[in-house]
Image (cartoon, rainbow over all chains, first blue to last red; front, side, top):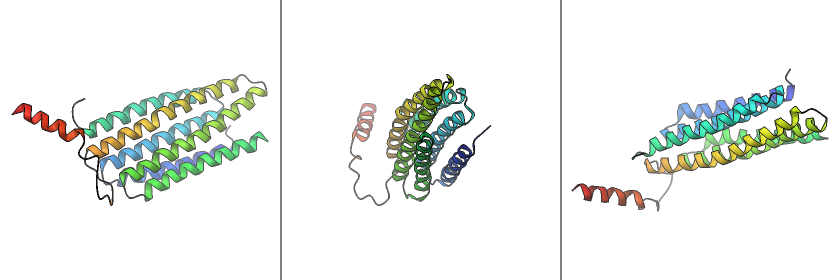
Length: 87
Length: 128
């Protein structure tokens, strides 16, 4: 069972994700889209932590840690790809 | 008493995440958008993680063993966010500068004459 205040927090985070998604769709250049994607990744991590606190399950927070590290590696790869040159 | 502290910390974190979204929409440039989108989410996630840690410590004090595990794992997630987020932002900014995106209203770019052009010239000289 989920408390009301955590539901409000998650809806506010969903609103932030929607604002970042607008930037991902409308971005004029490719680095704009990556900035939006990075912001969405961080907000999703926070949402997983809030889920873990709301449902009292520790496994969601473990998933959040793994998601943070994997999204970091994906961001580094996309940045390296934009930069050009040899790997 | 602790409930009120947890709600205040959650509110501060949500406020800063909201500021990140507004900054992403309103700023004119890649670098200023990066400034808003990375710093504000990192600062807000610190407050939200601290509120969850306080919740776990309170549950642990009331006698459940789940609370301590919740607090320690949230601390691990907070360390992961604090290590990875500024590094990714730095990589994105460097990639944007090297792929030719210029700041809005910039008059002089003093990073322009640095190693990239020199290495390119050396490579062409070797080929010739």
